Length: 639
Image (cartoon, rainbow, N blue to C red; front, top):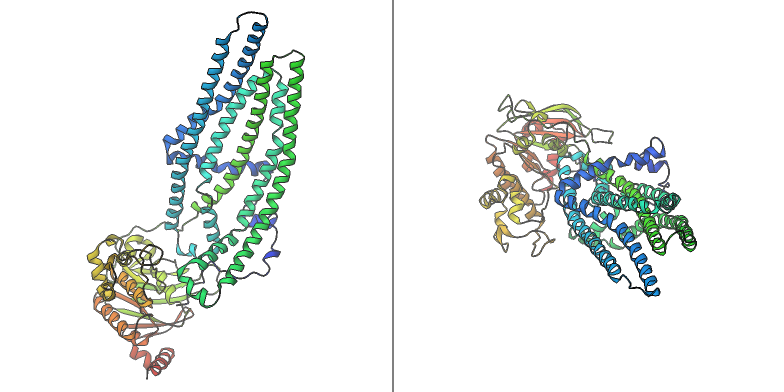
Protein backbone atom coordinates (compact mmCIF):
# COMPACT_ATOMS: atom_id res chain seq x y z
CA UNK A 1 0.00 0.00 0.00
CA UNK A 2 2.39 2.67 1.29
CA UNK A 3 -0.08 5.53 1.47
CA UNK A 4 -0.65 5.50 5.21
CA UNK A 5 1.75 7.39 7.49
CA UNK A 6 4.50 5.46 9.27
CA UNK A 7 3.68 3.86 12.63
CA UNK A 8 3.89 6.29 15.53
CA UNK A 9 6.46 4.19 17.35
CA UNK A 10 9.79 4.29 15.61
CA UNK A 11 12.96 2.85 17.11
CA UNK A 12 15.54 5.17 15.62
CA UNK A 13 19.04 5.13 17.01
CA UNK A 14 19.62 8.51 18.67
CA UNK A 15 23.33 9.06 18.91
CA UNK A 16 22.75 12.32 20.75
CA UNK A 17 20.35 11.05 23.38
CA UNK A 18 22.87 11.41 26.17
CA UNK A 19 23.02 15.13 25.43
CA UNK A 20 19.30 15.71 25.89
CA UNK A 21 18.21 18.70 27.98
CA UNK A 22 17.50 18.24 31.65
CA UNK A 23 13.93 17.30 32.64
CA UNK A 24 14.05 19.88 35.43
CA UNK A 25 13.85 22.97 33.22
CA UNK A 26 11.58 24.39 30.55
CA UNK A 27 11.71 21.20 28.51
CA UNK A 28 10.16 19.30 31.36
CA UNK A 29 7.28 21.72 31.43
CA UNK A 30 6.69 21.14 27.75
CA UNK A 31 6.62 17.39 28.29
CA UNK A 32 4.64 17.62 31.46
CA UNK A 33 2.54 20.45 32.82
CA UNK A 34 3.49 24.10 32.60
CA UNK A 35 3.45 25.58 36.07
CA UNK A 36 1.08 28.47 36.65
CA UNK A 37 0.69 30.71 39.68
CA UNK A 38 2.54 30.45 42.95
CA UNK A 39 4.14 27.31 44.36
CA UNK A 40 1.23 27.00 46.79
CA UNK A 41 -1.28 27.24 43.95
CA UNK A 42 0.62 24.61 41.99
CA UNK A 43 0.72 22.34 45.05
CA UNK A 44 -2.98 22.70 45.82
CA UNK A 45 -3.98 22.57 42.16
CA UNK A 46 -2.92 18.99 41.66
CA UNK A 47 -5.37 17.85 44.35
CA UNK A 48 -8.22 18.44 41.89
CA UNK A 49 -8.21 14.74 41.07
CA UNK A 50 -8.71 13.58 44.67
CA UNK A 51 -12.49 13.87 44.50
CA UNK A 52 -12.65 11.90 41.25
CA UNK A 53 -10.38 9.22 42.70
CA UNK A 54 -12.56 8.89 45.81
CA UNK A 55 -15.66 8.63 43.62
CA UNK A 56 -13.93 5.97 41.55
CA UNK A 57 -13.07 3.92 44.63
CA UNK A 58 -16.57 4.39 46.08
CA UNK A 59 -18.29 3.17 42.92
CA UNK A 60 -15.92 0.20 42.67
CA UNK A 61 -17.14 -1.17 46.03
CA UNK A 62 -19.25 0.81 48.49
CA UNK A 63 -19.07 -1.96 51.12
CA UNK A 64 -15.28 -2.20 51.11
CA UNK A 65 -14.94 1.59 51.19
CA UNK A 66 -17.22 1.81 54.25
CA UNK A 67 -15.33 -1.01 55.97
CA UNK A 68 -12.00 0.72 55.32
CA UNK A 69 -13.38 3.97 56.74
CA UNK A 70 -14.69 2.25 59.90
CA UNK A 71 -11.50 0.26 60.46
CA UNK A 72 -9.45 3.43 59.90
CA UNK A 73 -11.36 5.18 62.69
CA UNK A 74 -10.79 2.26 65.07
CA UNK A 75 -7.09 1.99 64.16
CA UNK A 76 -6.71 5.72 64.75
CA UNK A 77 -8.14 5.66 68.28
CA UNK A 78 -6.49 2.53 69.65
CA UNK A 79 -2.84 3.76 69.91
CA UNK A 80 -3.77 6.72 72.14
CA UNK A 81 -6.03 4.46 74.21
CA UNK A 82 -3.09 2.06 74.61
CA UNK A 83 -0.76 4.88 75.70
CA UNK A 84 -3.27 6.14 78.29
CA UNK A 85 -3.78 2.63 79.67
CA UNK A 86 0.00 2.21 79.78
CA UNK A 87 0.20 5.21 82.09
CA UNK A 88 -2.42 3.66 84.38
CA UNK A 89 -0.52 0.36 84.43
CA UNK A 90 2.78 2.04 85.40
CA UNK A 91 1.10 4.17 88.08
CA UNK A 92 -0.79 1.14 89.43
CA UNK A 93 2.47 -0.84 89.58
CA UNK A 94 4.21 2.03 91.40
CA UNK A 95 1.31 2.28 93.86
CA UNK A 96 1.32 -1.50 94.42
CA UNK A 97 5.09 -1.46 95.00
CA UNK A 98 4.69 1.34 97.52
CA UNK A 99 1.96 -0.67 99.30
CA UNK A 100 4.22 -3.69 99.51
CA UNK A 101 7.00 -1.51 100.92
CA UNK A 102 4.57 -0.15 103.50
CA UNK A 103 3.46 -3.67 104.44
CA UNK A 104 -0.06 -3.16 103.02
CA UNK A 105 -1.94 -5.45 100.62
CA UNK A 106 -1.01 -4.56 97.01
CA UNK A 107 -3.84 -3.95 94.47
CA UNK A 108 -2.98 -6.82 92.13
CA UNK A 109 -6.51 -6.92 90.77
CA UNK A 110 -6.28 -3.31 89.57
CA UNK A 111 -2.90 -3.90 87.90
CA UNK A 112 -4.07 -7.07 86.17
CA UNK A 113 -7.29 -5.38 85.08
CA UNK A 114 -5.38 -2.60 83.36
CA UNK A 115 -3.06 -5.15 81.73
CA UNK A 116 -6.04 -7.15 80.46
CA UNK A 117 -7.66 -3.99 79.11
CA UNK A 118 -4.47 -3.02 77.26
CA UNK A 119 -4.29 -6.53 75.85
CA UNK A 120 -7.86 -6.14 74.56
CA UNK A 121 -6.97 -2.78 72.96
CA UNK A 122 -3.97 -4.35 71.22
CA UNK A 123 -6.17 -7.19 69.90
CA UNK A 124 -8.66 -4.68 68.51
CA UNK A 125 -5.80 -2.66 66.97
CA UNK A 126 -4.28 -5.76 65.35
CA UNK A 127 -7.70 -6.87 64.06
CA UNK A 128 -8.41 -3.45 62.57
CA UNK A 129 -5.01 -3.30 60.89
CA UNK A 130 -5.38 -6.79 59.44
CA UNK A 131 -8.91 -5.96 58.31
CA UNK A 132 -7.61 -2.84 56.59
CA UNK A 133 -4.97 -4.90 54.81
CA UNK A 134 -7.54 -7.47 53.61
CA UNK A 135 -10.05 -4.84 52.45
CA UNK A 136 -7.38 -2.83 50.67
CA UNK A 137 -6.10 -5.95 48.90
CA UNK A 138 -9.59 -6.83 47.64
CA UNK A 139 -10.34 -3.26 46.63
CA UNK A 140 -6.98 -2.97 44.86
CA UNK A 141 -7.84 -5.89 42.56
CA UNK A 142 -11.34 -4.54 41.83
CA UNK A 143 -10.11 -1.01 41.25
CA UNK A 144 -7.21 -2.10 39.03
CA UNK A 145 -9.67 -3.96 36.81
CA UNK A 146 -12.06 -1.01 36.79
CA UNK A 147 -9.39 1.49 35.72
CA UNK A 148 -8.05 -0.81 32.99
CA UNK A 149 -11.59 -1.25 31.65
CA UNK A 150 -12.05 2.54 31.65
CA UNK A 151 -8.82 2.95 29.68
CA UNK A 152 -9.89 0.32 27.13
CA UNK A 153 -13.42 1.72 26.86
CA UNK A 154 -11.93 5.12 26.11
CA UNK A 155 -9.70 3.55 23.47
CA UNK A 156 -12.81 2.24 21.69
CA UNK A 157 -14.16 5.79 21.33
CA UNK A 158 -11.00 7.29 19.85
CA UNK A 159 -10.39 7.87 16.17
CA UNK A 160 -7.73 6.16 14.11
CA UNK A 161 -5.78 9.42 13.88
CA UNK A 162 -5.22 9.27 17.66
CA UNK A 163 -3.47 5.92 17.33
CA UNK A 164 -1.22 7.28 14.59
CA UNK A 165 0.04 10.10 16.82
CA UNK A 166 3.23 9.45 18.80
CA UNK A 167 2.32 12.09 21.41
CA UNK A 168 -0.97 10.30 22.00
CA UNK A 169 0.94 7.05 22.57
CA UNK A 170 2.99 8.83 25.21
CA UNK A 171 -0.24 9.88 26.91
CA UNK A 172 -1.64 6.33 26.69
CA UNK A 173 1.58 4.87 28.10
CA UNK A 174 1.53 7.33 30.98
CA UNK A 175 -2.14 6.58 31.70
CA UNK A 176 -1.64 2.81 31.80
CA UNK A 177 1.49 2.85 33.93
CA UNK A 178 0.59 3.04 37.62
CA UNK A 179 -2.90 4.41 36.85
CA UNK A 180 -4.60 1.27 38.17
CA UNK A 181 -2.84 1.55 41.55
CA UNK A 182 -2.83 5.31 42.09
CA UNK A 183 -6.57 5.87 42.80
CA UNK A 184 -6.56 3.29 45.62
CA UNK A 185 -3.20 4.59 46.83
CA UNK A 186 -4.70 8.07 47.00
CA UNK A 187 -7.76 6.86 48.92
CA UNK A 188 -5.64 4.72 51.25
CA UNK A 189 -3.44 7.72 51.96
CA UNK A 190 -6.55 9.81 52.57
CA UNK A 191 -7.86 7.27 55.06
CA UNK A 192 -4.39 6.99 56.56
CA UNK A 193 -4.30 10.76 56.93
CA UNK A 194 -7.66 10.64 58.71
CA UNK A 195 -6.41 7.82 60.94
CA UNK A 196 -3.27 9.74 61.85
CA UNK A 197 -5.28 12.92 62.37
CA UNK A 198 -7.48 11.07 64.86
CA UNK A 199 -4.42 9.67 66.60
CA UNK A 200 -2.71 13.08 66.62
CA UNK A 201 -5.78 14.75 68.08
CA UNK A 202 -5.89 12.24 70.91
CA UNK A 203 -2.11 12.55 71.44
CA UNK A 204 -2.38 16.35 71.50
CA UNK A 205 -5.09 16.17 74.15
CA UNK A 206 -2.81 14.02 76.31
CA UNK A 207 0.26 16.22 75.65
CA UNK A 208 -1.56 19.47 76.43
CA UNK A 209 -1.70 18.38 80.05
CA UNK A 210 2.10 18.40 79.98
CA UNK A 211 2.74 21.53 77.86
CA UNK A 212 1.32 23.17 74.71
CA UNK A 213 4.91 23.66 73.57
CA UNK A 214 5.30 19.89 73.38
CA UNK A 215 2.50 19.76 70.78
CA UNK A 216 4.25 22.46 68.72
CA UNK A 217 7.59 20.62 68.85
CA UNK A 218 5.81 17.44 67.83
CA UNK A 219 4.33 19.03 64.71
CA UNK A 220 7.34 21.11 63.63
CA UNK A 221 9.76 18.20 63.98
CA UNK A 222 8.31 16.42 60.95
CA UNK A 223 8.06 19.39 58.57
CA UNK A 224 11.59 19.34 57.08
CA UNK A 225 11.33 15.72 55.90
CA UNK A 226 7.88 16.46 54.48
CA UNK A 227 9.11 19.42 52.44
CA UNK A 228 11.98 17.49 50.90
CA UNK A 229 9.76 14.50 50.05
CA UNK A 230 7.21 16.74 48.35
CA UNK A 231 9.91 18.45 46.30
CA UNK A 232 11.35 15.18 45.08
CA UNK A 233 7.90 13.68 44.39
CA UNK A 234 7.27 16.48 41.90
CA UNK A 235 10.70 16.02 40.39
CA UNK A 236 10.16 12.26 40.03
CA UNK A 237 6.86 12.89 38.25
CA UNK A 238 8.39 15.32 35.77
CA UNK A 239 11.09 12.76 35.07
CA UNK A 240 8.42 10.09 34.56
CA UNK A 241 6.57 12.15 31.94
CA UNK A 242 9.73 13.35 30.24
CA UNK A 243 11.01 9.86 29.48
CA UNK A 244 7.77 8.27 28.19
CA UNK A 245 9.22 7.92 24.66
CA UNK A 246 12.17 5.96 26.09
CA UNK A 247 9.78 3.72 28.00
CA UNK A 248 7.84 2.99 24.83
CA UNK A 249 11.03 2.27 22.93
CA UNK A 250 12.02 -0.25 25.59
CA UNK A 251 8.60 -1.90 25.38
CA UNK A 252 8.83 -2.02 21.60
CA UNK A 253 12.32 -3.53 21.67
CA UNK A 254 11.10 -6.18 24.13
CA UNK A 255 8.33 -7.01 21.66
CA UNK A 256 10.70 -7.26 18.70
CA UNK A 257 13.16 -9.45 20.60
CA UNK A 258 10.57 -11.78 22.13
CA UNK A 259 7.73 -12.13 19.60
CA UNK A 260 7.40 -14.93 17.04
CA UNK A 261 6.39 -12.60 14.20
CA UNK A 262 9.76 -10.80 14.47
CA UNK A 263 11.90 -13.80 15.41
CA UNK A 264 12.71 -14.92 11.84
CA UNK A 265 14.18 -11.65 10.66
CA UNK A 266 15.88 -10.90 13.97
CA UNK A 267 17.74 -14.21 13.71
CA UNK A 268 18.41 -14.19 9.97
CA UNK A 269 19.69 -10.61 9.89
CA UNK A 270 21.55 -10.89 13.18
CA UNK A 271 19.62 -7.97 14.65
CA UNK A 272 19.46 -9.42 18.16
CA UNK A 273 22.73 -8.03 19.60
CA UNK A 274 22.15 -4.61 18.00
CA UNK A 275 18.62 -4.25 19.37
CA UNK A 276 19.63 -5.62 22.76
CA UNK A 277 22.43 -3.05 22.94
CA UNK A 278 19.92 -0.27 22.25
CA UNK A 279 17.74 -1.71 25.00
CA UNK A 280 20.72 -1.55 27.38
CA UNK A 281 21.52 2.03 26.32
CA UNK A 282 17.99 3.18 27.07
CA UNK A 283 18.14 1.50 30.47
CA UNK A 284 21.50 3.14 31.20
CA UNK A 285 20.06 6.55 30.36
CA UNK A 286 16.93 6.02 32.45
CA UNK A 287 18.85 4.45 35.34
CA UNK A 288 21.34 7.33 35.44
CA UNK A 289 18.45 9.75 35.89
CA UNK A 290 16.81 7.55 38.54
CA UNK A 291 20.08 7.08 40.38
CA UNK A 292 20.75 10.81 40.58
CA UNK A 293 17.25 11.51 41.85
CA UNK A 294 17.36 8.64 44.35
CA UNK A 295 20.72 9.74 45.78
CA UNK A 296 19.62 13.36 46.16
CA UNK A 297 16.34 12.31 47.68
CA UNK A 298 18.03 9.94 50.13
CA UNK A 299 20.64 12.47 51.21
CA UNK A 300 18.22 15.27 51.93
CA UNK A 301 15.65 12.99 53.53
CA UNK A 302 18.28 11.67 55.93
CA UNK A 303 19.80 15.08 56.65
CA UNK A 304 16.52 16.83 57.38
CA UNK A 305 15.19 13.74 59.14
CA UNK A 306 17.90 14.31 61.76
CA UNK A 307 16.01 17.46 62.80
CA UNK A 308 13.01 15.33 63.69
CA UNK A 309 15.21 12.94 65.65
CA UNK A 310 16.77 15.87 67.49
CA UNK A 311 13.29 17.22 68.33
CA UNK A 312 12.27 13.88 69.81
CA UNK A 313 15.33 13.50 72.02
CA UNK A 314 15.04 17.11 73.10
CA UNK A 315 11.50 16.37 74.24
CA UNK A 316 12.73 13.11 75.82
CA UNK A 317 15.25 15.04 77.94
CA UNK A 318 12.63 17.63 78.88
CA UNK A 319 10.16 14.96 80.06
CA UNK A 320 12.89 13.11 81.96
CA UNK A 321 13.94 16.30 83.78
CA UNK A 322 10.31 17.07 84.71
CA UNK A 323 9.95 13.54 86.11
CA UNK A 324 13.12 13.87 88.20
CA UNK A 325 11.81 17.17 89.58
CA UNK A 326 8.63 15.40 90.60
CA UNK A 327 6.36 17.48 88.38
CA UNK A 328 4.99 14.35 86.68
CA UNK A 329 4.69 10.74 87.79
CA UNK A 330 6.64 7.82 86.39
CA UNK A 331 3.50 6.60 84.64
CA UNK A 332 2.95 10.02 83.10
CA UNK A 333 6.54 10.07 81.92
CA UNK A 334 6.05 6.70 80.27
CA UNK A 335 2.83 7.86 78.64
CA UNK A 336 4.31 11.16 77.39
CA UNK A 337 7.37 9.48 75.93
CA UNK A 338 5.19 6.88 74.21
CA UNK A 339 2.77 9.56 73.00
CA UNK A 340 5.58 11.77 71.75
CA UNK A 341 7.27 8.91 69.88
CA UNK A 342 4.03 7.67 68.38
CA UNK A 343 2.91 11.24 67.76
CA UNK A 344 6.09 11.98 65.90
CA UNK A 345 5.51 8.87 63.77
CA UNK A 346 1.92 10.00 63.17
CA UNK A 347 3.08 13.50 62.14
CA UNK A 348 5.66 12.01 59.78
CA UNK A 349 3.05 9.59 58.41
CA UNK A 350 0.51 12.41 57.99
CA UNK A 351 2.95 14.66 56.17
CA UNK A 352 4.14 11.70 54.11
CA UNK A 353 0.51 10.93 53.24
CA UNK A 354 -0.01 14.52 52.08
CA UNK A 355 3.16 14.33 49.99
CA UNK A 356 2.05 10.94 48.67
CA UNK A 357 -1.39 12.32 47.84
CA UNK A 358 0.33 15.11 45.94
CA UNK A 359 2.34 12.53 44.01
CA UNK A 360 -0.72 10.33 43.41
CA UNK A 361 -2.60 13.33 42.03
CA UNK A 362 0.26 14.04 39.66
CA UNK A 363 0.10 10.51 38.28
CA UNK A 364 -3.70 10.55 38.22
CA UNK A 365 -3.51 13.63 36.03
CA UNK A 366 -2.14 11.28 33.34
CA UNK A 367 -5.15 8.99 33.65
CA UNK A 368 -7.75 11.73 33.59
CA UNK A 369 -6.04 13.68 30.82
CA UNK A 370 -6.28 10.50 28.76
CA UNK A 371 -9.90 9.82 29.76
CA UNK A 372 -10.81 13.44 29.00
CA UNK A 373 -9.20 13.27 25.55
CA UNK A 374 -11.63 14.88 23.05
CA UNK A 375 -13.00 12.34 20.57
CA UNK A 376 -14.23 14.73 17.90
CA UNK A 377 -17.77 15.51 16.85
CA UNK A 378 -20.81 13.67 18.16
CA UNK A 379 -21.66 10.53 16.13
CA UNK A 380 -24.62 10.69 13.76
CA UNK A 381 -27.93 8.97 14.40
CA UNK A 382 -29.45 8.49 10.94
CA UNK A 383 -30.19 4.93 9.82
CA UNK A 384 -31.28 5.60 6.20
CA UNK A 385 -30.38 8.16 3.55
CA UNK A 386 -32.79 10.43 1.65
CA UNK A 387 -31.78 8.93 -1.74
CA UNK A 388 -31.73 5.11 -1.49
CA UNK A 389 -29.74 3.65 -4.34
CA UNK A 390 -27.69 6.80 -4.93
CA UNK A 391 -24.61 4.94 -3.77
CA UNK A 392 -21.34 6.54 -2.67
CA UNK A 393 -20.25 10.02 -3.71
CA UNK A 394 -16.91 11.75 -3.08
CA UNK A 395 -17.36 15.47 -3.66
CA UNK A 396 -14.15 17.51 -3.71
CA UNK A 397 -12.64 15.40 -0.91
CA UNK A 398 -9.19 16.22 0.45
CA UNK A 399 -7.37 14.84 3.47
CA UNK A 400 -4.03 15.71 5.07
CA UNK A 401 -2.50 13.61 7.84
CA UNK A 402 -1.76 15.50 11.07
CA UNK A 403 1.74 16.94 10.89
CA UNK A 404 2.00 16.40 7.12
CA UNK A 405 2.47 19.25 4.68
CA UNK A 406 1.12 17.57 1.54
CA UNK A 407 -2.42 16.14 1.27
CA UNK A 408 -2.77 12.36 0.97
CA UNK A 409 -6.04 12.90 -0.92
CA UNK A 410 -6.46 16.03 -3.03
CA UNK A 411 -9.83 17.19 -4.39
CA UNK A 412 -11.18 13.73 -5.30
CA UNK A 413 -14.63 13.51 -6.88
CA UNK A 414 -16.19 10.21 -7.92
CA UNK A 415 -19.50 8.33 -7.85
CA UNK A 416 -20.12 4.62 -7.28
CA UNK A 417 -23.62 3.18 -7.70
CA UNK A 418 -25.08 -0.22 -6.67
CA UNK A 419 -24.20 -3.01 -9.08
CA UNK A 420 -20.95 -1.30 -10.05
CA UNK A 421 -17.36 -2.25 -9.28
CA UNK A 422 -14.63 0.34 -8.89
CA UNK A 423 -10.89 -0.34 -9.09
CA UNK A 424 -8.30 2.01 -7.60
CA UNK A 425 -4.90 1.97 -9.27
CA UNK A 426 -1.73 3.82 -8.37
CA UNK A 427 1.75 3.58 -6.97
CA UNK A 428 2.37 3.03 -3.29
CA UNK A 429 1.58 6.26 -1.47
CA UNK A 430 -0.88 7.47 -4.09
CA UNK A 431 -3.76 7.58 -1.60
CA UNK A 432 -5.70 4.39 -2.39
CA UNK A 433 -5.95 3.05 1.17
CA UNK A 434 -6.48 6.52 2.62
CA UNK A 435 -9.51 6.85 0.34
CA UNK A 436 -10.93 3.62 1.81
CA UNK A 437 -10.31 4.80 5.36
CA UNK A 438 -12.24 7.98 4.58
CA UNK A 439 -15.12 5.93 3.20
CA UNK A 440 -15.25 3.83 6.37
CA UNK A 441 -15.00 6.97 8.56
CA UNK A 442 -11.72 5.92 10.11
CA UNK A 443 -10.68 9.43 9.08
CA UNK A 444 -12.72 12.59 8.55
CA UNK A 445 -12.11 14.59 5.32
CA UNK A 446 -10.16 17.81 5.70
CA UNK A 447 -12.25 19.30 2.89
CA UNK A 448 -15.26 18.24 0.83
CA UNK A 449 -17.78 15.59 1.78
CA UNK A 450 -18.63 11.93 1.28
CA UNK A 451 -22.25 10.79 1.02
CA UNK A 452 -24.03 7.44 1.08
CA UNK A 453 -27.56 7.37 -0.31
CA UNK A 454 -27.50 11.15 -0.33
CA UNK A 455 -26.60 11.48 3.37
CA UNK A 456 -23.19 12.74 4.53
CA UNK A 457 -21.23 10.02 6.32
CA UNK A 458 -20.94 12.09 9.52
CA UNK A 459 -24.74 12.02 9.86
CA UNK A 460 -24.97 8.22 9.73
CA UNK A 461 -25.11 6.14 12.88
CA UNK A 462 -21.55 4.69 13.01
CA UNK A 463 -22.69 1.13 13.70
CA UNK A 464 -25.24 1.25 10.86
CA UNK A 465 -22.71 2.74 8.45
CA UNK A 466 -20.04 0.15 9.20
CA UNK A 467 -22.59 -2.67 9.01
CA UNK A 468 -23.07 -1.73 5.37
CA UNK A 469 -19.36 -2.08 4.60
CA UNK A 470 -17.39 -5.31 4.35
CA UNK A 471 -13.71 -4.49 4.14
CA UNK A 472 -10.37 -6.27 4.15
CA UNK A 473 -7.18 -4.25 4.38
CA UNK A 474 -3.82 -5.50 3.23
CA UNK A 475 -2.53 -5.21 6.81
CA UNK A 476 -5.46 -7.17 8.25
CA UNK A 477 -5.38 -8.37 11.84
CA UNK A 478 -4.27 -11.90 12.68
CA UNK A 479 -6.15 -12.66 15.88
CA UNK A 480 -4.69 -15.19 18.30
CA UNK A 481 -8.10 -16.84 18.56
CA UNK A 482 -9.94 -19.82 17.08
CA UNK A 483 -9.88 -20.13 13.29
CA UNK A 484 -13.67 -19.76 13.16
CA UNK A 485 -13.56 -16.72 15.43
CA UNK A 486 -11.04 -15.12 13.06
CA UNK A 487 -13.67 -15.48 10.34
CA UNK A 488 -16.56 -14.52 12.63
CA UNK A 489 -14.83 -11.27 13.57
CA UNK A 490 -16.19 -9.87 10.30
CA UNK A 491 -19.72 -9.69 11.77
CA UNK A 492 -19.88 -9.42 15.54
CA UNK A 493 -23.57 -10.39 15.58
CA UNK A 494 -22.64 -13.82 14.21
CA UNK A 495 -19.25 -14.07 15.88
CA UNK A 496 -19.94 -17.58 17.27
CA UNK A 497 -22.15 -18.84 14.43
CA UNK A 498 -20.33 -21.82 12.91
CA UNK A 499 -22.81 -22.11 10.04
CA UNK A 500 -21.98 -18.56 8.98
CA UNK A 501 -18.28 -19.34 9.37
CA UNK A 502 -18.63 -22.12 6.83
CA UNK A 503 -20.59 -20.03 4.32
CA UNK A 504 -18.10 -17.16 4.49
CA UNK A 505 -15.11 -19.53 4.32
CA UNK A 506 -16.43 -21.07 1.11
CA UNK A 507 -16.61 -17.62 -0.50
CA UNK A 508 -13.16 -16.70 0.81
CA UNK A 509 -11.77 -20.18 -0.04
CA UNK A 510 -10.55 -20.76 3.52
CA UNK A 511 -12.58 -23.99 3.62
CA UNK A 512 -9.98 -25.66 1.37
CA UNK A 513 -7.47 -25.93 4.23
CA UNK A 514 -9.78 -25.94 7.28
CA UNK A 515 -10.30 -29.68 6.81
CA UNK A 516 -6.56 -30.16 7.38
CA UNK A 517 -6.70 -28.39 10.76
CA UNK A 518 -6.71 -30.70 13.83
CA UNK A 519 -9.93 -29.21 15.23
CA UNK A 520 -11.38 -27.65 12.09
CA UNK A 521 -12.89 -24.25 12.79
CA UNK A 522 -12.15 -24.76 16.50
CA UNK A 523 -8.38 -24.79 15.91
CA UNK A 524 -6.43 -22.22 17.91
CA UNK A 525 -4.40 -19.95 15.62
CA UNK A 526 -1.09 -18.31 16.49
CA UNK A 527 1.66 -19.40 18.86
CA UNK A 528 0.71 -17.38 21.91
CA UNK A 529 -1.54 -20.07 23.38
CA UNK A 530 -1.37 -23.83 23.84
CA UNK A 531 -1.73 -26.01 20.73
CA UNK A 532 -1.81 -22.94 18.49
CA UNK A 533 -1.25 -23.46 14.77
CA UNK A 534 0.42 -20.95 12.45
CA UNK A 535 -0.90 -20.39 8.94
CA UNK A 536 0.93 -19.44 5.77
CA UNK A 537 0.56 -15.93 4.37
CA UNK A 538 -1.87 -17.12 1.70
CA UNK A 539 -3.96 -19.04 4.24
CA UNK A 540 -4.17 -16.03 6.51
CA UNK A 541 -5.29 -13.94 3.54
CA UNK A 542 -8.08 -16.41 2.79
CA UNK A 543 -9.18 -16.18 6.42
CA UNK A 544 -9.26 -12.40 6.14
CA UNK A 545 -11.24 -12.62 2.88
CA UNK A 546 -13.72 -14.93 4.56
CA UNK A 547 -14.01 -12.38 7.35
CA UNK A 548 -15.08 -9.76 4.79
CA UNK A 549 -17.65 -12.16 3.33
CA UNK A 550 -19.21 -12.64 6.79
CA UNK A 551 -21.14 -9.41 6.26
CA UNK A 552 -23.86 -10.77 3.99
CA UNK A 553 -25.95 -7.63 4.64
CA UNK A 554 -23.18 -5.27 3.55
CA UNK A 555 -23.81 -3.55 0.22
CA UNK A 556 -20.30 -2.10 -0.06
CA UNK A 557 -17.48 -4.62 -0.40
CA UNK A 558 -13.94 -3.23 -0.17
CA UNK A 559 -10.93 -5.39 -1.00
CA UNK A 560 -7.57 -3.68 -0.45
CA UNK A 561 -4.86 -5.90 -1.98
CA UNK A 562 -6.82 -8.96 -0.80
CA UNK A 563 -4.93 -11.52 -2.88
CA UNK A 564 -1.31 -10.33 -2.69
CA UNK A 565 -0.22 -13.63 -1.12
CA UNK A 566 -2.30 -15.84 -3.45
CA UNK A 567 -1.50 -17.34 -6.81
CA UNK A 568 -3.18 -16.04 -9.98
CA UNK A 569 -5.71 -18.88 -10.14
CA UNK A 570 -6.86 -18.34 -6.54
CA UNK A 571 -7.11 -14.61 -7.20
CA UNK A 572 -9.29 -15.18 -10.24
CA UNK A 573 -11.62 -17.37 -8.19
CA UNK A 574 -11.90 -14.74 -5.45
CA UNK A 575 -12.85 -11.99 -7.88
CA UNK A 576 -15.33 -14.26 -9.56
CA UNK A 577 -17.02 -14.51 -6.15
CA UNK A 578 -16.89 -10.73 -5.90
CA UNK A 579 -18.51 -10.24 -9.31
CA UNK A 580 -21.27 -12.66 -8.37
CA UNK A 581 -21.91 -10.77 -5.15
CA UNK A 582 -22.11 -7.32 -6.71
CA UNK A 583 -25.27 -7.69 -8.76
CA UNK A 584 -26.97 -5.14 -6.50
CA UNK A 585 -23.97 -4.06 -4.41
CA UNK A 586 -20.90 -1.89 -4.76
CA UNK A 587 -17.38 -3.25 -4.85
CA UNK A 588 -14.10 -1.35 -4.51
CA UNK A 589 -10.94 -3.20 -5.51
CA UNK A 590 -7.31 -2.28 -4.94
CA UNK A 591 -4.80 -4.55 -6.61
CA UNK A 592 -1.46 -4.36 -8.35
CA UNK A 593 -2.50 -7.17 -10.72
CA UNK A 594 -4.04 -5.60 -13.79
CA UNK A 595 -5.60 -8.87 -14.86
CA UNK A 596 -7.93 -8.32 -11.91
CA UNK A 597 -8.32 -4.57 -12.30
CA UNK A 598 -9.36 -4.75 -15.96
CA UNK A 599 -12.61 -6.54 -15.05
CA UNK A 600 -13.88 -3.59 -12.96
CA UNK A 601 -16.67 -1.45 -14.39
CA UNK A 602 -14.82 1.76 -13.58
CA UNK A 603 -11.11 2.29 -12.99
CA UNK A 604 -9.60 5.31 -11.20
CA UNK A 605 -5.88 6.02 -11.45
CA UNK A 606 -4.44 7.99 -8.51
CA UNK A 607 -1.16 9.87 -8.31
CA UNK A 608 -0.15 11.75 -5.15
CA UNK A 609 -3.75 11.78 -4.00
CA UNK A 610 -5.22 13.15 -7.23
CA UNK A 611 -7.29 11.41 -9.91
CA UNK A 612 -5.28 11.60 -13.12
CA UNK A 613 -7.31 9.10 -15.18
CA UNK A 614 -10.62 7.27 -14.94
CA UNK A 615 -12.84 5.14 -17.11
CA UNK A 616 -13.30 1.54 -18.27
CA UNK A 617 -10.32 -0.64 -19.21
CA UNK A 618 -10.81 -0.25 -22.96
CA UNK A 619 -11.18 3.50 -22.67
CA UNK A 620 -8.01 3.86 -20.57
CA UNK A 621 -6.04 1.65 -22.94
CA UNK A 622 -7.20 3.81 -25.84
CA UNK A 623 -6.04 6.95 -24.00
CA UNK A 624 -2.52 5.46 -23.92
CA UNK A 625 -1.47 7.24 -20.73
CA UNK A 626 -0.33 6.08 -17.27
CA UNK A 627 -2.77 3.14 -17.00
CA UNK A 628 -2.01 1.83 -20.46
CA UNK A 629 1.74 2.05 -19.84
CA UNK A 630 1.50 0.18 -16.51
CA UNK A 631 -0.81 -2.46 -17.95
CA UNK A 632 1.51 -3.06 -20.90
CA UNK A 633 4.58 -3.32 -18.66
CA UNK A 634 2.91 -5.90 -16.45
CA UNK A 635 1.52 -7.88 -19.38
CA UNK A 636 5.00 -8.14 -20.92
CA UNK A 637 6.22 -9.69 -17.70
CA UNK A 638 3.88 -12.65 -18.19
CA UNK A 639 4.94 -13.35 -21.78
